[in-house]
Length: 137
Image (cartoon, rainbow, N blue to C red; front, side, top):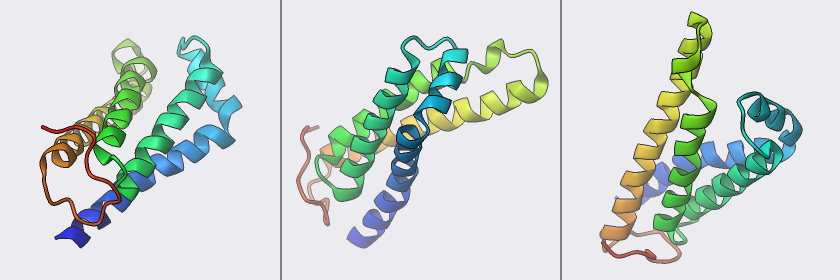
């Protein structure tokens, strides 16, 4: 079972690590998009969300306070969904659908991250992690 959980962590974390890489290598383009969505200090917001994705992804991947890492992902995902993907404000049907897909993806990933938080903070035998949980549920 430990190997299955590890494989799941690897697959889950890859999304956030590659996203963090994009935040750091395409900061100007992403900041321009964020600015068009009304995000204040867009460049700092892009960099900050990249840091949260990097730290959260590495934490889950390596099993270093993976409960805290999971919460960092929630902190990045929910505001992103609410600020960047406001599908309810779009009038063009195709744009609305695209934003709704991104909104739902971010909300679902936030939910999965919350479940991982509970898993890591509650289960005694995590297996194949470097540290135990930071929180105790």
